Image 1 (cartoon, rainbow, N blue to C red):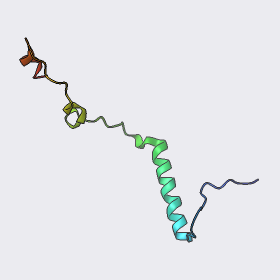
Image 2 (image 1 turned 90 degrees about the horizontal axis):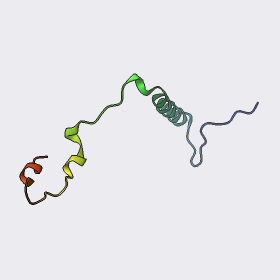
Image 3 (image 1 turned 180 degrees about the vertical axis):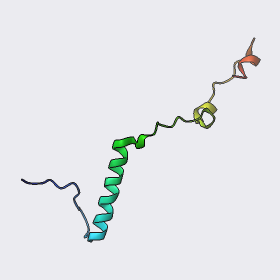
Image 4 (image 1 turned 60 degrees about the horizontal axis):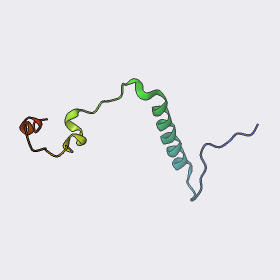
Length: 70
């Protein structure tokens, strides 16, 4: 049975320690994506939302002062 390589060196000549470090990093990233860490996704606070700074232009006319506070 022929096994397919997961990593392939395209350029350079890494030693065994460099390949081991690369393999450990890839395995750690892959395992973090699969399990999700058992945590719920964080919801950004409305205070830190940059989109809230982009507001519509203020309108002139009756009730404009009330609309300016929203």
